[in-house]
Image (cartoon, rainbow, N blue to C red; front, side, top):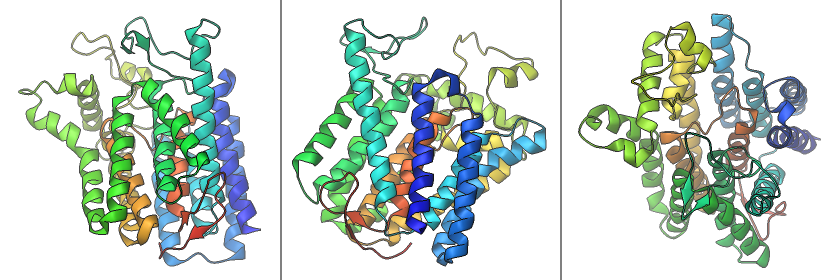
Length: 406
C-alpha cells in the first residue's frame, strides 16, 4: 500500500509537469496543481498512519516541505496569490521521501519522464526543421540562439534550458546505469537524452551533465573524491554571482555567463528592498518592478523574470526564512551524498553536483509561476530518496543494491 501511494503521487506530479508542457491552457498554476497537492496531502496522511519514518527521513521530508512552502508563506504575509505549484511540490516531495526507500519505482517514473520529454522534443524539433510544426525551435525578435546556423531546440519544454535540465539529468542517470550494465537499453537511453541536450545548446546543462557524469565515473573508482565533488557542488551554486560582485567591474563576465550578471544584480537589488521578509513569489516580475516604479534598467531591453541563481532567487522571494530553508535542504542533500556508500553514494553526489552547477546560473528547484519547471526537482528528490542503485536496464529498475541511510 505504501509503495502504491508513493507511485501514484509521484506519477501525478510528473503528469502535471508534462501536461503543462503540452497543453497551453494549463501552463500557468491553477486547478491541476491543487489536485496534485490534495492527492499528495491525502497520500502523506496515509503513509504516516501506516508507518513511522526514520528520523533522517523525517528531517529530510521536513526540510523539503519548509523549502517549497516558503514562497507560500511569503505570499500570505504580503497578501499575494498563494503559489499552488510550489505547495504541490512540497507535499509530493514529502510523500516520495517518507514512502518506501527501497522502492525503485519513483526513480523509474523519473527516467520515463525524462525519456519522454527528450524523445518528444527530438521529434518536434525534426518536424520544425522541415517546417511542419512551429514552436519547437527557440528564438525571439530580440534573441536567437544558434550554432552553425541551427536554432536551439526547445522541444515540448518551451525553452532550451528547461529541456536541457530534464534531458541532462536523465543522461546522468543513464551513465549510472551504464557503469553497472552496458545493455542496449542503456545505450539507447544515453543516445536519446544526449542528442536533445546538445541540440538545446544550453551551455550550463551540457557542462553540468558532462561534469556530473565524469564525477560519477571518478567516484566509482576513487570513493575518497566524493567530499570534493560535494564541495565543488556547493561552491558552484554561489561562485558565479560572487565573482561578479567582486570582479564584475574588471572582468567581462557577461560574455562568459550570457547576460546573467545583469540578472544577478537585479536579484541583489530585489533583496535589498525586503531582505528579511522577501518580496513574495512574484519577485522580478513585470508587476513587481511596476510597483516600484521601475520597468527597465540601464537602457537594457531584457528584463529577466528571475535572478538566474537559486540562492538569490530564494532570498529575494522569501527573505531570511527562505535562506534558512534552502540551507536546510542543501544540508540534507549533502548529507545524503556523503553518508551513502558505494555506487548509491556516488550517484547522490553526482546529482548534488548537477544541481549545484545549475544553481549558479539558473533556478533548478522550481519557480512558483512555472509548473513545468518542477519536473527536475521532483526527479532529483526521487533519486535522492531511493537508497539503492538500480541494477540492469531501467524502465523501471527491477532491483537495488542497498545502501546505508539516509
